Figure 1 (tube, helix red, strand yellow):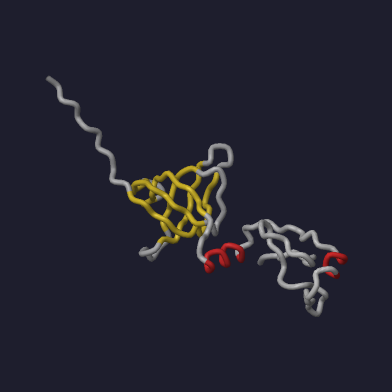
Figure 2 (cartoon, rainbow, N blue to C red):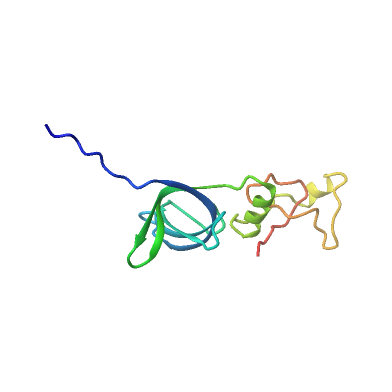
Length: 147
């Protein structure tokens, strides 16, 4: 009688952190090599996996196992996903990195005139600039240019 030998799998670990650098990304296959700043580690962690798109500055959540590649050293082979920031500080940092595409606010001069108490700055602009994905304010006619 042959007993089935259980397959040994490496222990998995969940890591999360800020993607500091995209070392490699193949748009066709999604294969990517990322350098991630994680809590509790002094140096960035190399994470290898697959994502349809990825940009430095995004937050990564990954689950995988540590391997020592003969050529590239210690890294995590993982399944992963990126998640949007949820804290005010994280959102501010995310927007400040220029990851959100610009959009032109659709307000025109007549909307500005009809906006009531909207004040303008010295350049004739009303309030802070709009960002893509943000509800456009009446009277806003400029775009935030990150960087």
